[in-house]
Image (cartoon, rainbow, N blue to C red; front, side, top):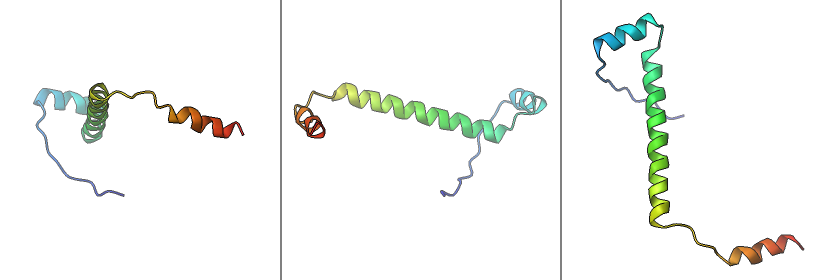
Length: 70
């Protein structure tokens, strides 16, 4: 298991108060938000890499698939 890292961030007072009134765990919401942002950034990064270097048809795999037909 990876050790957690402590971090701090600034949150608008009114938003923090509203979250507390609604019973929202601000730490958990922040973790979830960061995880969502990381997944989105990775997807964007993958898409950009694919657009720079798209996959091409590789005729090798036609022969490789034929090996299973035995």
